[in-house]
Image 1 (cartoon, helix red, strand yellow):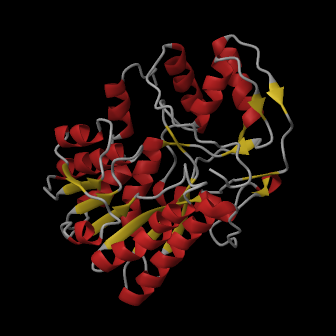
Image 2 (tube, rainbow, N blue to C red):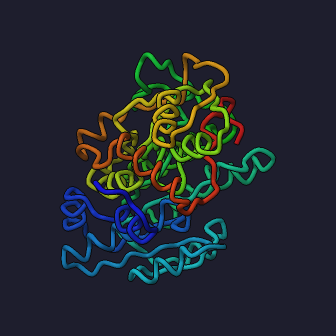
Image 3 (cartoon, rainbow, N blue to C red):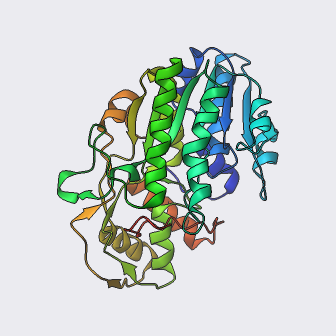
Length: 341
C-alpha cells in the first residue's frame, strides 16, 4: 500500500469498515452511543460505525458523548453525520440525560496524569462504569480496558492470555482492573451483555508506541531498551475489533485481548527506523526478560487477520515523520515499568 500523505487520507484509512464490520453492523439493531468519543480513537471509531451503517442502508444513529475540550474532534464528528453531545460523564444528571441506545461503546478512562491525581483516576476508571451500567442496563456494552491489568509477563511466553490471573502494577492498572470488576458485577446483576477489550497498543501515524520509537530515532535520542518488547495494532484494526465485538457480548462479560499478531522487539524496531531515516541508532540499557505483553490469538480467530502489519506501520510512520507530518505530542510512556503514568 502506498504511503499516507495527508490527515484526510489517514482519517479515511482509520475509519474504513472491514468486511467483518460491515457484516456485524448490518445485523446490529438499534442506535450506538460512544462514551468518551473525544479521545484519540473515538472519532475514527464512530465514523467507521457511521460508514458501516450507511453501507447497510440503515439509519441507526451514532451518538458521540464527550466533554469535547480543545481540538477539532467535535467538528470532525459532526461533519461526518455523527451526533455529538457535550457531557461530563461523571456528572450523574448529565449522564442521565443521554439518549437511550441499544449499543454502547465505553471508551472513557484516565491513564496519563494519574500520578498525583489517583482519586480522579479511580473515579473515572472504577466508579464511572457503575454509573454507566445503571444508565444503560438494557443495552449491549463493549468496554475498553487495557492489557496492563496482567502486569509484567515473561517475554519467552509470548504474552498474557485472557484467562491469566491479573497482577496489575501501579494505581492506573489497579483502577483498570477495578473497571473490569465493576462492569462484571453489574453485568451479572442486570444481565447486561458485555465484552471487555484489553488493548495493547493502538497506533496510527500521529501517536502510538511505534511513533514514539520513530521520533526518538529521527531526533537522535537514545532508545531505552529495558522495556524491550511490545505489542502494537493499527488503530483501524482496533476500531474494527471493537465494533465486531458486539457479536460476542455475553453475561458474565467475555474478555478479549486486542493487539497485533507480532511480538515486537524495540531494538529491532529502532534499527528499522534507523535504516529508513539513514541514521545511526544509540541504545541504553538492555532488554528485561519481562514486559507488558498480550497474546491476542483469540480475537484474531473471531475477527480475522489484521489489515495492516507492523512492517507496513513502520514504513508509513517513517515516511510520515520524515515529511514532517502532524504529531499529537501524546507520548505513550511505553517504557514505564512501575505503573506510574
